[in-house]
Amino acid sequence: MSSIDKLIEDSVMSLIGGEEGLKSKTDELLAKHLKKAHFIPIKYRVLGGFLQSLNIKFGNFIEVLMDKVISNMPTFEIYEISGKRNVDLELEERCERAIDEYVDNPSHDRLETLYDEIFTLQIKGEKFRKKRLDVNVMFKFGETSYYIETKYNDDHDTGKFQDINRKFLKTYAGLVRLFRFDDKRKFKPILYYFLPTIRYNPNPYLREDIEIFRGEKLFEKFGLSTTYKQVKNALTRLEEILDKTFDEFRDKIFERVSERMNKGRGR
Image (cartoon, rainbow, N blue to C red; front, top):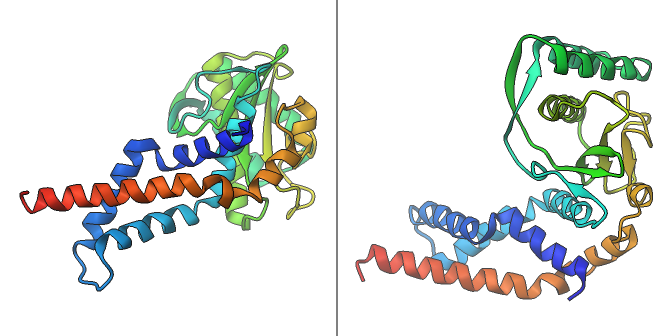
């Protein structure tokens, strides 16, 4: 099995929460379908529900895969916080307000000034409050640390698009505080889109090839050991790569349903 094939399998497992996540999802779907009379046997209804829940997460799958591709680089020093969800990060009140004001009225000319405010207020500010945010990937390469948020495609509607950029900047600011970074040249944020297509050109909040990277440009910037072409080619072989994995999911779901049903009957 190639390294990219293994990363794809690992990404699917991460997406469902591993073995425990599979059991939990099976139990959730079983409880839901037990309330309904139906001519399709319940184990197939549970399996169908599981597959449907995964089907709508394809964009999330690509994001998880890219996080793993980046984190798998031997030349990167991966921070322990990388890949963590719902992390309590501190935001200084004036700093959070400055980010909100910038996102509500963006201008590339004011972005460096915003960074200066972030580094000043997040280190020397007074009133902080915690905000739960996700940290996709964080690593050190050479003398510089990077926070990368990955997205599958730049196709979000205006409201969602604004929220993505707002959250991205607030997560960056929270990490400045957490790790006490004091030099914006030593800690850089990157918003990465796997597909190179551009919906909003230019992005009103962030700058292309500075904060925003698309497609193969991120691979080229850091010289990733897995190439963009390898990832794209692997995605065309997903059915082949994951066929055995989904057979195992089916068997485990059927086994879990049988186990829970027998327990409920007192066997």
